[in-house]
Amino acid sequence: MNFIEAIILAIIEGITEYLPISSTGHMIIGSSLMGISELDFTKVFEVNIQFGAILSVVVLYWKRFFQSFEFYKKLLAAFIPAAIIGFILNDFIDQLLESVAVVAIMLVLGGIILVFIDKYFEKKATKENITYIDAVKIGLFQCIAMIPGVSRSAASIIGGMFQGLSRKDSAEFSFFLAVPTMFAASGYKLLKAFKAGTLTFSTNELQLLAIGNIVAFIVAMAAIKFFISYLQKYGFKVFGYYRIVVGLIILGLLAAGYDLKVI
Image 1 (spheres, rainbow, N blue to C red):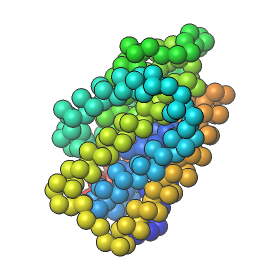
Image 2: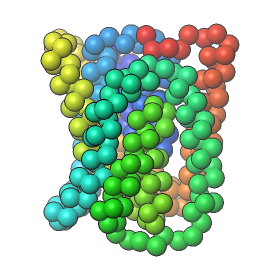
Image 3: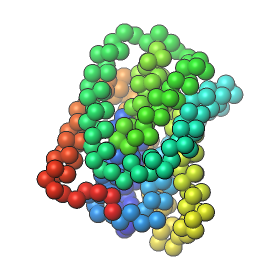
């Protein structure tokens, strides 16, 4: 991996992490299209730059993270389902992450849902605050995103809307929930790499990690601001169409014999 490839992947991560279009799916597709070898460092890089994206939420919403201890208890309640299911299905999830076809199919299916989801939730939101039960239910929705291509953001936002939250409140809770979820998932993968003895970096690789996190942080901040504003005005439909188009293009390339598997 060179610096240009690292910056491109960091931009992809920053843009897609909080938009309902699947960051994992786009990272897999981006790596595949650029022919980036799936070496130990590449895997660590793709995980590590999520910390830059996580930090963007903390910086943008820092006041919310200091408002009350109740805030953290509800985040914990929403995080627990992913912690349990992710730990149990970790090996199976890793296998799915190697399939571009799975990503493409889920992009299309998720896109179809997003095209019609605004119509389903035409009624105004009925809640301003979530209960602990609501938080757990949102956490269960988030677990669907363990399938690459689903989108953690989309799953948890839709989960929030099913609990009666507005699109804005659902999106913001999804951002907050991303902090412990991504931190735990990234930390666990880095711990596994450390135990396997693959977590060693050259000077060049450390520079790639630094620039990747900086770029992901900056781009993610811009993406969050854009998404909240756009979502309130226009809803999910454009993201649904985008997912469908990208998914169909990838399926078409695979059908035509192009080798897009993660290498």
